[in-house]
Image 1 (cartoon, one colour):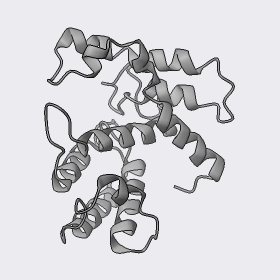
Image 2 (cartoon, helix red, strand yellow):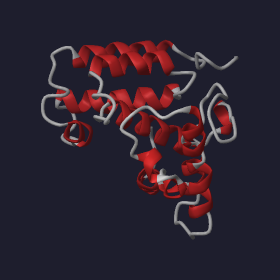
Image 3 (tube, rainbow, N blue to C red):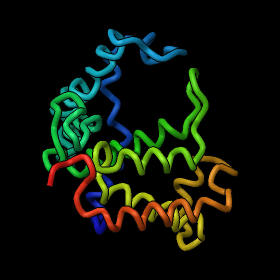
Image 4 (cartoon, rainbow, N blue to C red):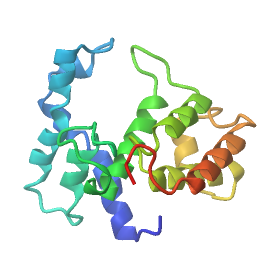
Length: 194
């Protein structure tokens, strides 16, 4: 995305700290081996604002870290939380953390469900880009993964995180190339009025 090392480091730190607000959420909700109900979900949804409160007083070298924690569950279409922000109101770093957090959730086993196939993850990204995820962020992420699976990049951050075999299907490069091509055509985010 053309970001400098300091900006990338700030987003990386925000990625590590984005869920620090879960410290104020009941452990039984966080560790529930089932899908939580509406009341528990409301309790869990307090964590972004709590994370902001925890991180704001700290003197960070990258000032937007508290905001990335606060806004990582905002959506481009305004249906996110805690503030219902839309598209340009959401800091780009929060959009990146949002995608990384969602990708991790989709590709990690949970007590109540198995991780999703990569084909299913790409289907979800395609469906939710423009409403939940920023087009530029998804496109850059897909390009980075494609570079890893084709060997163009020696870094193996995503493939290593996902584990052996997850991205080794022969269809993966095609799925990613098709997604990137579709996103190249998409000028205005799908869920946001132009």
